[in-house]
Length: 246
Ligand code: 6GU
Image (tube, rainbow, N blue to C red; front, side, top):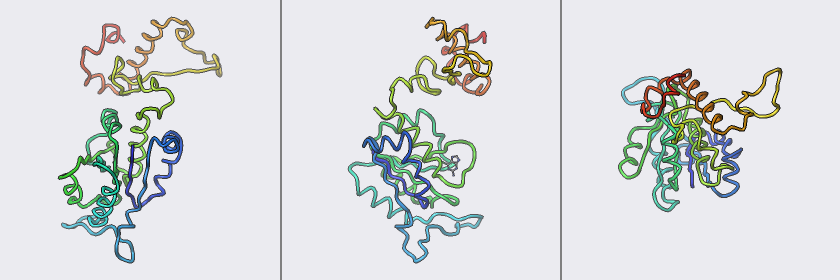
C-alpha cells in the first residue's frame, strides 16, 4: 500500500517511522511519502492560508497550494488513490472504515491546520475521485496530523503480514464475528500472583468452553458499563439468555 501525507508539519508524522508502521515500511509493505505543502506555495513567505470570505475568526487554507500538490502527487502514481480529508466535520472513523481503506492500494491524506481547507479543493477532487472527509471523534484538535497517525495505524495493522499473528485481530473490539458489538475484556499474564492479586481461577482451568464463556461475560459486563450504546445499537439476536442475565 502507498500512503501520501501532505502537511505543513512534516515532522509531526515522524512517529510513522516507529513500531508497527515503521517496521511495515522497512519491510516494504508500506510506501509512505510525507510532503511539505509549503513546497507548493509561491510567495516569499510560503503562505498557505488567508482570511475567510464572509468574515469570522481564524484562517482558511488557500486552494492553490493544495491543488498543485495533489495534482503532482496524483500524476506520480498509477491509478487513483482514495483521498482522506481529516476534519471534525467528517464521517466517524470506525473499524469498518479502517477495513474498507485497508484494501485500497493507495491513500492520500490531507491534514489541515487553521479552520480547514477552501471548500473548492474538496469539490474539485470529489468530482473525479473517492474523497472521504473523516473525523476521529467528537472533540476538536488543532490539526489533522494526529488523526492521520491514528488512521494510518488502524489501517496498517490490518494489512496482510503486518501484524505478527493474523488471529490477533479476530477478537479486537469492533471486529466482526461472534464477539462483534462487544468490547474486549481483561487480559492477564505471568506471574500468577502480583501484589497479592491472583488470576481468575477459570483461566487456569484448561477448560476452553468455560474460558470462552467467561471471556464473553467479561466483555459483556465491560461493554454494558463503558459503552451501553453499543449494546442498544446491536442486533438483539447477537445476545443469548446468559448475556442478558449479566
Ligand atoms: Cl480529523 N481533525 C481535527 N482538527 N479535529 C478532530 C478530528 C480531525 N477528528 C476529531 N477531532
